[in-house]
Image (cartoon, rainbow, N blue to C red; front, side, top):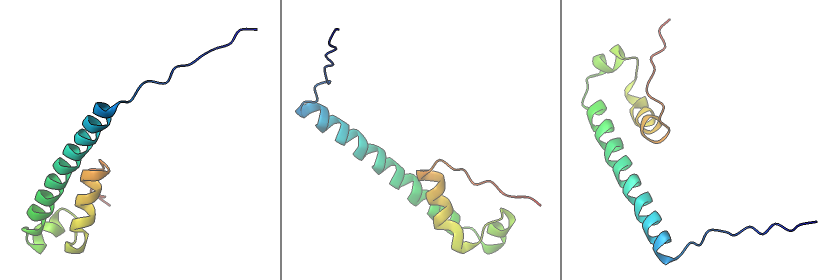
Length: 78
C-alpha cells in the first residue's frame, strides 16, 4: 500500500499583504460605485423613480443589491 503526501502551498508574508491589498482595493471600488449609484438615484424625482418601478425608500437597498450581490434591477412588469 502506497502513501500519498500532499504539500500545502506556502503562503508567506507577501502573499497575505498583496491579497489583503487587492481585497481592500475591490472594496474601495465597490463603495465608490455604491455611493455614486445612490447619489444618482436619489437625485431623480419621485415620478422618475416610479417610472422605473422603484420607490424612494428602496434606493439604498436596490443599489446595495446591484453593487454587492451583482443583482441588477429587474423591473417586474405585470
